[in-house]
Image (cartoon, rainbow, N blue to C red):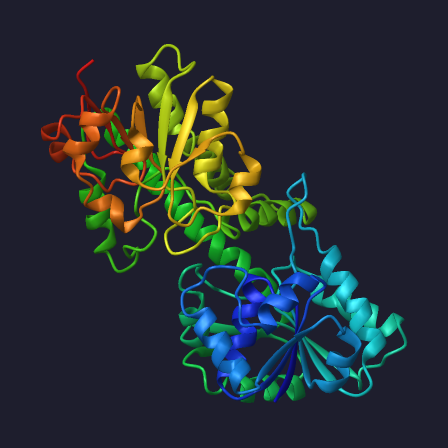
Length: 436
């Protein structure tokens, strides 16, 4: 099949390469000329496991190309995927201006029947808005069908999730369009769900909001564990054995981040307000998460009356392992608050990007964990990177100004920290001590 993907960010690029893998002919369109040049040269602008290798294979096989020419790409394609960004406005509503702009441009270029698929995460009713734009621009129902097809990708595992996902949701009332997309997705190892556009649009938000709620729920239980000397790891394990609950997203820590959960929970609350429907649970989920990510700052302030001039070491900057994405990462909020209190920040993350260096140009970016803790008064673990699990804690404690560890991801055993010379250790509901 001949496919056009508009927007080659995280979602668009994964989708495009997945389709190209199965011998479809893909034209990707983006307004960023530097990104287009990079991709045509086989260079991925984001880190995602397996993506660069697949890109170069698809380029070699002449199954994918990248351009700025939307008009030509539309005319050559049978299916058009819209995968542009939908950021959050200050009032938590979803900014769909990029989707609207692209829809207008697509409608002007359509020369025969096309299936237009909305892959971007959009609020309920967007499918109808796009259809009205097409009709207002002189097209009729014979020229197009609009399909809602939300993505369910985990960063770090996105390619596998697209190729072998739990489900693929297709929201459309046209049998013709659904037949075409059913053929497109036939090679993929995933269950197809056919539904209305409104249901498809809402499924994405409902899924992410529920997963975010599980995280905030277990974090509140973890905070209680810290006060009553209970163990959150055992509680999470026991809960996870209940098939009705499952163990996924029950790991306590300093909260969720990334491009999906923060944005989609807020969007769902905003959509609810638009339709006079309350989401008290989701609002509480958001509030718990906002408080949770600043818990390390609260703990370090309780230990030290004054942080002015003290070096604090941040281990991990990205919101999760296996990605270079720092969007809504708890580390950013922690760093921001510590800087306000006069602390000096040294940080380490092997995936450190120019993006965070531009946000915080004055903090110290180190090449290894030992350089990061030299003369430090506290370590805060923000990302559960594999190399942090087996650190030489004794060596770290020796070179610190004061051996204090706040384990924001519960990866260090408390007894091991104590035996290694750490005078102060805090986990998230998994045991703590302070010898000060």
